[in-house]
Amino acid sequence: MSTPRRFLLENAATLVTMNAGREVLADGWVAARDGLITAVGNGPVPAVVDGAPSADFARYDARGCVVLPGLVNTHHHLYQTRTRAWRGAVDSELFPWLRTLYPVWARLDDDAFHRAAVVGCRELLRSGCTLTTDHHYLFPRAASPHLLDVVIDAALQTGIRFHPTRGSMSRSVKDGGLPPDDVVQDADTILADCERVISRWHDPRPGAAVRVALAPCSPFSVDPDLMRRTAELARRHGVRLHTHLAETRDENAYCLRMYGCRPLDFLESVGWLGPDVWLAHGIWFADDEIARLGRAGTGIAHCPSSNMRLGSGICRVRDLRGAGSPVGLAVDGSASNDSSNLLAELRQTLLLHRVLGGASAMTVQEVLEMATIDGARCLGREDAGAIAPGRACDLAVFDLAAIGYDGADDPVAALLLCHPEPARATIVGGRVVYERDA
Ligand SMILES: [Zn+2]
Image 1 (cartoon, rainbow, N blue to C red):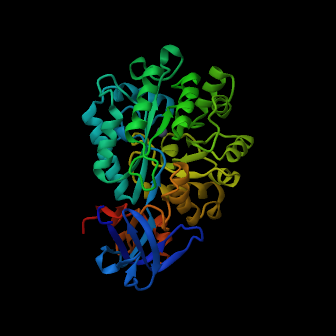
Image 2: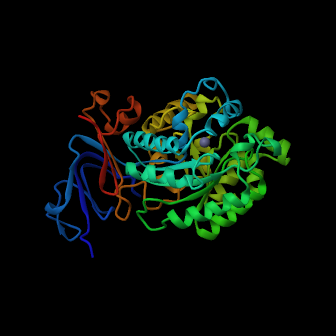
Image 3: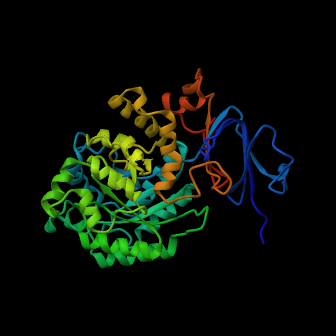
């Protein structure tokens, strides 16, 4: 048996645990064994922690820093990092933006997908994100038939904890969908690769580096039969389901025309309204639809920058949370954000919702909960999102001496109210995987 790998972060000026009591500790420390937290405390570190001399631990000194649970990104399209600020789509709404970009994305090759994933994940880590999903639904003819493996290899190379989704598109223009014919696949090819990806990569154990979900792209790019068969496959293997829903009014009109119902009715009709599902955007829900989502426990990935950039609308975050839906935060793909800075997304969330309802319409605490513990709930990661025994030792360390935080009074609020600074360190499973240059 190998020796347990022990890690200790100490001297954190402020340790935001997001545990059940939402404790915030001054002079905090966190101990971990084999990547999972074993003890959390404050004041001097005991001579013996978790049965071992604390002097034997690999240590990280967080003096002068605020330490958060690693931020959780609940929606992304890493490949879009190759097509940021794309000429011809800079002032477009979603449907024309997609029609401009589909043919560009169809020409991406394996090297482009690999590079995009490395860049996107490094950017996320730099902003304190330790766990990200990737909604990968694009499988160009020229790319590897096992393209998701290329993306997963790239993400793991950066040290981030990864929750990729095997996405899909099956309905092209000739069948009434939005994507061109050369970027869709048939249902049997899609489902066979879903099965392959789950068996190769999905790890249900606590602290897993990779878990997989299945993710048909949207109501306007897949057919109902694929939605149903994907849900059956996911539930057979105990993996989660993800898709885009209710992002734009164009999508409402499409669903009414194509299915004779609204997007949420479509979702329910294919067996998707459940606690093992999280949806990207969720903007255009009516009151009764929000109540249905809440009763079902279906999660929402809120993507404020992308929604503002494409002029899509504003997700009713507080209503959804009040109804019982976990709401996480997300950067969305890098062709509609056009960055992967998750800390910046916390700030956007705070500011966007205050525009609507005044300064009390969104609090710093609510945003922090969405970015950590509730994002982890969206992904079904009961082992992430908080600094507590049994959870993964995923930590985001922010230095209050950084110029952008100089003069700040409330150290936690400063992370959202001040312009985002890169993390000083980002720790995944008790390993420092990103460190800011001095
Ligand atoms: Zn998206």
